[in-house]
Length: 399
Image (cartoon, rainbow, N blue to C red; front, side, top):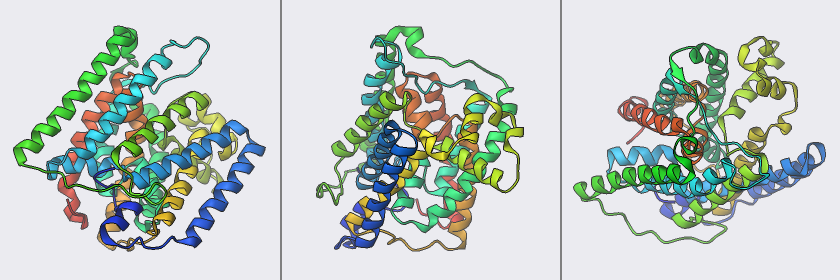
């Protein structure tokens, strides 16, 4: 995928610097062994269905890393370089996913019980998405970007993820208050406009954003460099491979889990579990009294779809980086960069809870499900990104 995320992905890093010359056998053995053992454990302790979702997560990690599919850099490059390739890649993935999701979510297949990423619209969404967009530029990665670059061996992403988890827990505690601010109920465009009408509106909206990026490129005289595809197992992958993989794996997630691919709920749960272990009664907070939160808090992480897929994603990305020969090649960040990772992670975690997800759960999942909140999330998060881009140099981050 063009325009790499947060530090360059393993495959792209090797392709551009010559680092990836040999397979990292140690990282490859560890990741494959962990994938095998956890697949067997989850299948035995939970269910074969959960084990299949774990492997889907691993596949997503491979596709994200080999395709360098990053939302953070893709959005930033539109603004700073007038390079819209990354954002357009996201738009066509959303469009292709919507063509599959909207009919399925709205009952066009009798007997299929699935639900979309359809969330309320209001103050919580606008504020949360803005904070997330700002935070992902300082953290140098979104929800999926944090996980797949962590799998690729990025030390900076350990810092971002830790702060992300803390911010998610705080956001879960504050969310009920935010939901009492002005807003209105979820809007499913297919219920308003019918399935064909919703799809027409979604595709027209995506096309309009894509046309804007192309216009910006032409005005700036931008010419995309020609890049050759790598090998399937070692990467880098071209746009078609990575995007198609994300669409297919997200569809499988919907069919098996009953809902679209999500990421950041798992971070809130990990943090709540850790807080419980330290003696804090998280069940005293309203968010964790709601049915989904109460159940997740009282059961194993291996029974939580988002957590299982997140773990699989990290291990899949590790295997991909090992095959590319680029695992853990990025240097550990200095103090300014680490501070940016902390602030960015906290903002993303808090913003994701208020905004009902990240680029995956709210932007991709929301728009592809036909939810109005996905479009408002995109607009608010992009506004936050504009602020974040201006603040990046303060933390030693380039644009």
